[in-house]
Structure formats: C-alpha cells, structure tokens
Length: 221
Ligand SMILES: NC(=O)c1ccc[n+]([C@@H]2O[C@H](COP(=O)([O-])OP(=O)(O)OC[C@H]3O[C@@H](n4cnc5c(N)ncnc54)[C@H](OP(=O)(O)O)[C@@H]3O)[C@@H](O)[C@H]2O)c1
Image 1 (cartoon, rainbow, N blue to C red):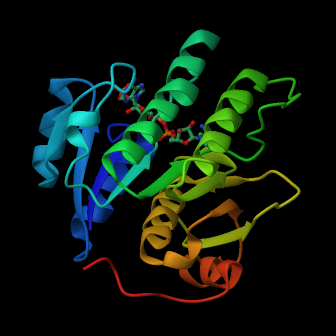
Image 2: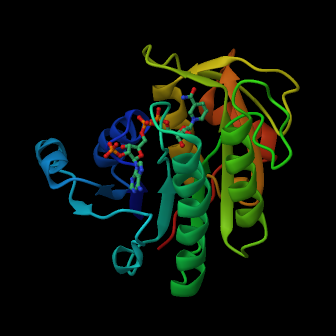
C-alpha cells in the first residue's frame, strides 16, 4: 500500500515513516515542508516530497493508496495558523483526495475535537480539529479518525484503550499512535470509525479489532 504521510517530519510522522518503511506491506512517501528535512528520510530509505498543505499538495496524490494526516501547526504558532493548517489545510487535502480518487484517509485528530468545543485551554485547536473531522465524515472517503489523548515522547508500550467515546482524557506515547495508524490501515473494518485512544491494557491490534468487530481483511492488491 503506497501511503503519503502528511506531517512526516513531525514526531508522530517520523515514527510512522520508520515503521511503515520496515513493514513489508507498505511503501511510505514522506511529505515534508523543507528540503533540508530530506536527509533524515533519505537515511531511513523513505522517499520524500516537498510541499505545504496551505498551498495544496495535490500533485503528490496520484498513485497513492492512502493518505495519513498527522500535520499540525504546533503549540508555538497563533490561533490563525491552527485554522490555516489543522482545519483548512486538512479540508483542502481531503477535498483533493476526493477529487483525485484517493479513497483511504487516516486523520490524526484529538480527543475533544468538536466544532463547538468550550474547552478553556485549547478551544481554538479542538474546534479546528472538529471542523476538519466533520468535513472528513461527509467527504465520501474511506476514512478513519484517530483521536488520541495528550501525546508523550515515551517509548510505546503497545498497550492501549480505545472507544468511539472514551468519556475521559488520558495520555499516550506517540509511538503507540503510530502503531495504531498502521493497524487502522491494515484493518478495513476501521473505515468510517472515529477511534479515541489513550494508554491502556490491550494490545493495539486486539483493542482495535474488538472495537470495530472483526479482524484483518486482505490488503489492497
Ligand atoms: N500534542 C498533543 O498532545 C496532541 C494530542 C492529540 C493529537 N495531536 C495531533 O497529533 C498530530 C501529530 O502530532 P505531533 O506531535 O507529531 O506533531 P508535530 O511534531 O508538531 O508535527 C507536525 C508536523 O506538521 C507539519 N506541518 C505543519 N504545517 C504544515 C504545512 N502547512 N504543510 C505541511 N506540513 C505541515 C510540521 O512540519 P515542520 O516539521 O516543517 O514544522 C510537522 O512536521 C497533530 O495533528 C496533532 O495536532 C496532538
């Protein structure tokens, strides 16, 4: 499965790039913003393309079997950039995928994403993520929306808790999110689902299969 990783130079994106490269059933392509980031991916053996979702990256979509959105404006930018990237950048990418016929789309969103979030701390972010998630739900794409809790840089444990609505917050290592993205690509029964995830007690593959009601289906030919 040829997969475009949007936000590949980020923390989740970098982990995901390495993991997809070493999995025998994926062929990742890293979308990065700066040509100077290319060396890291060349060292991994992962091909990279340089583009910015604010300007559109549709030229890199033909030939892809799936797109992962794990980009984000980050905490250091202002509220406008959150709207530009987490919301409008994602929406533009979703629309381009629909136009070009790239059906599989995995969105890395966040627990609490909601166009009407009243969060005190990160309302603007959660609203932007919520608008993008809703746009994806009505896009006609074969989507999965992963909504992790607060991300941590610790090593993954491989143990998670998932639900369509966990009803609480929590934390999760970025490595476990990267593994869950790969599991969602492999398990076609995740299509159309919103999956909240935090650290837990179940192995990633089993936790996701249990939630979506089944196991593996064969990968795209
Ligand atoms: N932090 C949390 O606790 C938390 C919780 C739940 C969900 N999330 C979500 O999880 C995802 C991954 O998080 P992370 O920690 O891996 O993020 P990260 O390290 O900040 O990475 C974000 C990546 O997005 C790229 N990016 C930003 N603007 C872009 C643009 N216009 N075009 C193309 N790429 C662009 C950045 O590029 P550069 O490297 O060039 O800057 C960066 O590589 C994000 O969507 C985030 O919102 C985060």
